[in-house]
Image 1 (cartoon, helix red, strand yellow):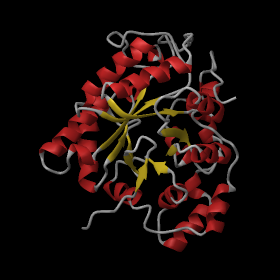
Image 2 (cartoon, helix red, strand yellow; image 1 turned 120 degrees about the vertical axis):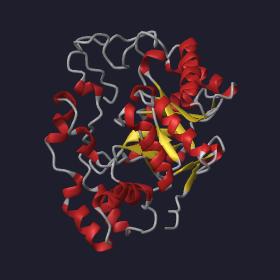
Image 3 (cartoon, one colour; image 1 turned 30 degrees about the vertical axis):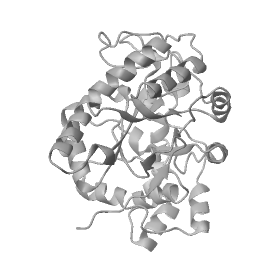
Image 4 (cartoon, helix red, strand yellow; image 1 turned 60 degrees about the vertical axis):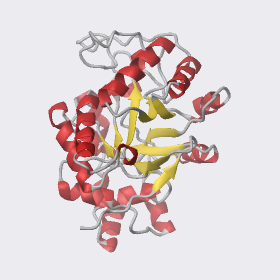
Length: 330
């Protein structure tokens, strides 16, 4: 079987990022090493992680095993990971970047993102059982900290100076904050990672990013699918709308091109220059998700998929943080 060719996106930092990768959100810690190793065997080279996912160490173990077995070199692998909200102060950014880099065990991080544009009270990572929005097990309180985005961004630039990360960027930011960061950035915003699917197209944000040389990575490309299994506060929106896989336009295009609905949704994004990071536990679907640049949709078909937009956001702390909503997308 010949390897599937995956295009690359040139970041503003000058480095190249594969356009299709593997997302590590919700990958269990005890299976992460094997999952990543097997994904590499199938052709995946981009892995998208985060401190919040709590599987960086294990994912790194899978990559190091693949390198040791001669499947890939470090240079062929692209690692994205993210800084959690409790660590926005300068000293904590540096602390966490070093800690996360050591967890991956690969020498450097390719792309380091600020996970959310909100700072929360510092919690010592050695005593924090699991990073979360809440400060208590009852999920009754969210504690914010007074840290400007500028302090966090400038600390992330120091992470680049130290050689810990090659490129830096942001996640879940809106246009206003992107303009703000650009006004003082010493290193460019290389990437913006956002929730992006036909129910949440965000065309103006995408246009602004492209105009300013910021690469876009879409997460939750299948819309409600990733949220259905979560607790009610997180899944209620997803349960209230039909699956994108069952949309008439997506199903008809899948039939027309002899592709799966998932491939159609991923091609809708990649054909518009956006990177995607789906995941699956199925070898067949993993290969299908990787093979999403070998066919083209017509412009009118892309427009029909985009017309499903209803501004429906599933990853919204203004909704699921019921007792202390953080309305960062207002």
